[in-house]
Length: 207
Image (cartoon, rainbow, N blue to C red; front, side, top):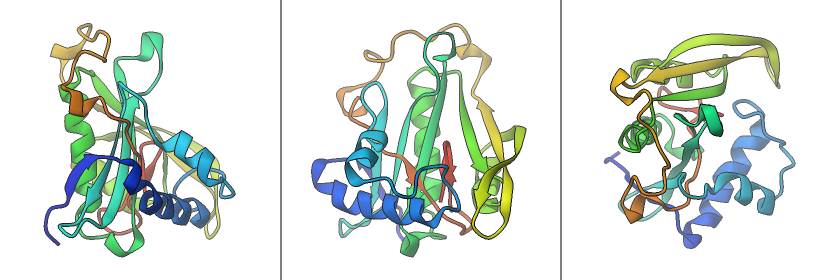
């Protein structure tokens, strides 16, 4: 597969993005989201407002292959740490879409002035996501045991994964709204990449 075009989400993209989100959360394997979530709730959850960002990964023909959202992990004293989530259509998994989205999110966070990125709830049985995040520099800093009820594996752990960018960023972050060009202040989308080698599901999740 050729490298997908990663761009801000538009209203026209939403039906395909909702189909991806719906498939992922109903699978109950990679995201701690309510599998009965309706479309309106999902849209409000998935579309990030500035200074966050929601994007899609599109094929050359314009088909939506995956989506990601990224933004500030916590307000106030925690606002120097970013986070992201990813989802990939089942038919596009294992083809580099998740890797492309993950690298895009990390690059966005670096350029936006964040000091680091944290994934709060990576399901430990989602080894494709864990391996991908490790390849791009994340490490597991802790695991909450038996905190995710997996349909096949029962109660499994959720990893917290962390990537610190550079000490040069420490103490340097200010308000985000004037950091990036206009195209980087668009609403943001989250991505789930699945269980292929590049599949991801997180709160910082990839499916």
